[in-house]
Image 1: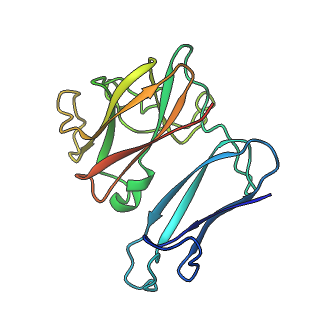
Image 2 (image 1 turned 30 degrees about the horizontal axis):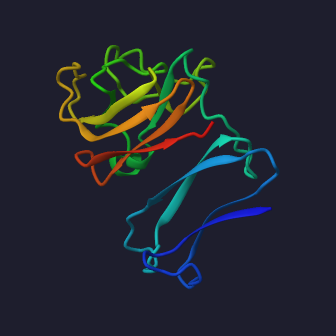
Length: 205
């Protein structure tokens, strides 16, 4: 069975295909495929002027495998008795083009770094994923106990490494419940480093 995701301009009827843009599709093979599709846009005055010009997407295969050889899971299971947030700055990377600022992810008020964080930035929750056999994932892994948590992001523009106390102001604060063993995608996005938000996508059991 073919599964297709198509984008339409706001206010369009599902049957109005004049300005529709294909986003993603896959042939279901019965392997319980589960994906998150991240939509983004490119600001380019030379692109055509259709309502969805510049629309692009990234696909994250959470479970199963897709037609493009993508395969889940996105990260190793959380530590025993805990859940975890899988954090990425991918939606903001096109704006900042690498380098500064750095982004820091807070679960409540904790400054605990990610399990796979940068060893040169100890004691602070820098969103960075090292490449290792232990944590084979592009996401920064932040474990947390089951329960309800406030999550936030801080952008840091100084070339000097911050202390935990200096990491302010908190942006994009939202609340998310977490269960033992659960993984939740956390996408840091926004129009600029000073307008950062967090979109959360719990991975279904």
